[in-house]
Image (cartoon, rainbow, N blue to C red; front, side, top):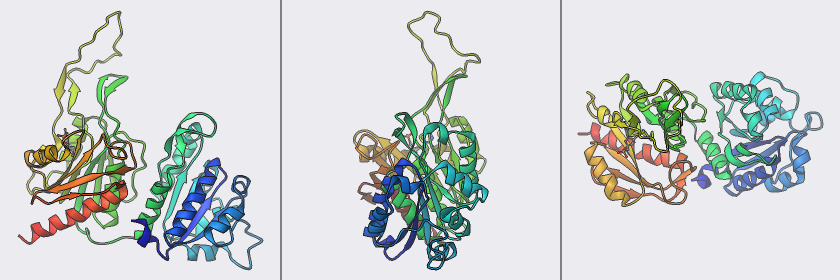
Length: 406
Ligand code: C5P
């Protein structure tokens, strides 16, 4: 999608001093290739990692870093006027702290303070730093203020440790820029959209639970996209590491039962329900009050009970919302999905083969088939979850319109 939506758009890329600064070269290069007009702003520390000449060449424009040297030619106010969107990638703990607390002591931090267009922050740092109370609080503050905070990727970090803290891949960064530039629409103004996201946790004892690897990314992308289209959005989310999308009423829950209750609390008050959560189908029949001991036995039997089916319960609501569900399958995807669409009386099902490369739980991309209640079946190519969210809501818009015309 990036191509046409970036053509002629003016984007600032802020680069700060982390080893991931070199990855910002790829971002700048792809933005320029897609037709964007890019200005790169570096901090002093970023210049220790990548030479300004690299960014100047890739962006086709001088790099900005010195408040004083450039005063006559370009200043932070002019930069703020230039930007239709700004992405800080990588964002260090330092720039995050400064941005969160209004400290403006160099060109990038000063410019961030003056921007009125959307800003995206893509943190990249050591896991312990990322998890420090200060950074978490600062990121939450920024998210609350409407800054789009991207989730770090996990993997091997420059310091040799494994964990969260890597800069997300270029496609995720590009998608965030495209989303920010897309601006608001009023397509869904006046519609109330309820979305479930993430996994659920079904406790065995105080320290163990049954769950699955759902990241919540699909549900969160849907919430952001529905919000962007002007809907009044509620997100009921299981435990994930994502920041709550701005402008979205977010309720955090843990178990399937809690998710069910949070959804039922809105019974009859919703126009579109999207069940993107990977709800556990089973929960331990008893939750032990104390941690279970190994006590020498080689076998342990857990008795499981069914959890409430959230989508089924939504199907009983009066008035009944438009219902969209997901079918994560590992074989015979379309047939299973069609059967589920009918059984759960959904209006639209998003079927994906979670065993296919690039599709499913923890990835940033997905490959899905949309099957709707009037028998239309659309096989979509591999795309980012943000793009898939837009496809799903386009289809939801059509279904709502055809309902209204009946
Ligand atoms: O039957 P299955 O669990 O695969 O159905 C998947 C769809 O149903 C998803 O949209 C999921 O969010 C929803 N679901 C639910 N409540 C459950 C289980 C699944 O809403 N207990």
